[in-house]
Image (cartoon, rainbow, N blue to C red):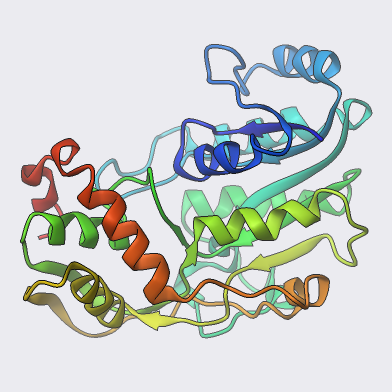
Amino acid sequence: MKLLITGANGFVGRNLAQQYAERHEVAAPGRAELDLMDADAVRSYLERGRFDAILHAATYRSTRLTGSAPDLLNANCRMFFNLTRNAHAFGRVLFLSSGAVYDREHWHPRMAEEEFDTHVPADAYGFSKYICAKAVDGLERVYEFRLFGAFGPHEDWRVRFISNACARAVWNLPLVIRQNVCFDYMDVADLGRLLEPMLTRELSHRHYNLCTGRAMELRALAAMVVAASGKRLDIEIKNAGLGNEYSGTNARLLAELPDFRFTAMEDSIASLYRWYEARKGEIDPALLRFDG
């Protein structure tokens, strides 16, 4: 297939581009090649490319390190609509959305797709995804996939929990958790395997939770990192109590792919630890102090 992957300089887009390049013709332009904020440039690019499918992974997000960009809401919505308004020039769009559409203040275990619009997200990132999700049903051949959490190579090890924990372990530092919480994390390799069939098959819905259905405590994930390292490292939890669980049901997703099997979390974490161990020299341990 001829695929366009947006956000290829980011964590998810970069991994998808690498995975799919083995089997498909992949275009993964950087901002200098395609400015998704420029409506005319996007239309011209799509009309020249005539892509079978677009995986829209480009996004502005808020992190503890960078905070929230002042134009986050405008940018995320504008990029989405600049792409999806050109239905004459693509086969379909898989929009990588977020569980943030359910509003973080009202998260609860195993949120279902039908609960969407029960609350309007208060934060700019969640609200931007909410606006785009509301528009999907009125657009041609656009499908929303609400990703809860992904981890793997190339993510920002300064702030992303599992990668931060692996990088700390590589440098023999204690693993730090701000507050323990149950979280549904997915190996980014599994993410690619899940999305690939969605590029071509007839889908029963326009909106899907993209999650494993196996929420785990951050403390347990940190223990898996320690086990993968083979070292004796402390796990520090800064704030007592258990935060709101962030997880969703994946019944819709698995109805489309009933034979899909997720990689065991212990295996995924061990593989990622080895990836960081081989790149120890690229990790500045001073930056690993951020979460502490």
